[in-house]
Length: 253
Image (cartoon, rainbow, N blue to C red; front, side, top):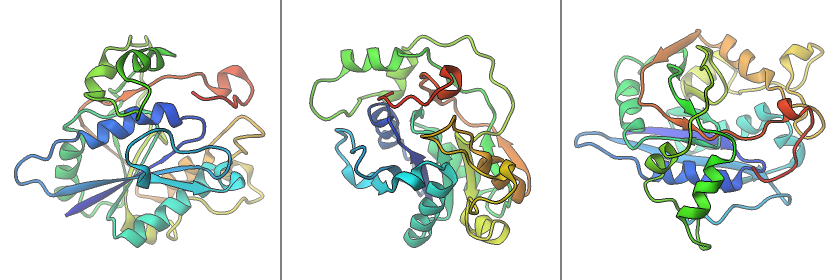
């Protein structure tokens, strides 16, 4: 079995994350396929709580100072994946919404030509962005006040108005797929090393400065380049960003 550990980080995104969790739950398993997607969602202990999603087992609390630097959270997620016997890590944003055949298509590649890769695997950037606020408006017109499980999540997300934003061919932290063996052999078993004197290797403090995850770049540099693969389109639910506002937004997005 191909076990894919889907690792995301959820700080003020608990409401938006139910779109992603629902879309992963709705993945199809074609006859003959043998894969499992395990969700690992990190959140701040004491400052946030799992949103009203039926499966509470996917949520993992972490400390405030750990959450402040994305790379340190991903170190913890790697350890959980290793303990669970997962072969692959999928580092993704908390508000990616996947089509029902996404992980079946991915698993076929991971079991085939990518089975021994030491590269960072990412999808060709043809996913699309919704307009800011579109997902929230659609959510409240689609679900009740109980558990936030969104039926047909991907098709509902496609109803959101699309942003006119050019997608660059650039590897990013929202879709990084890596073999655990590659992490162990090329990255000393971790995503992020403790801060050094070289500030270009360090993650900025997410809550005290505008977040910059330099660990993403360093992590990919330690691997054997980037391998671009063609997968079904996934959707990113757009939102207000700290960098655009020039300040940290401590609000539910």
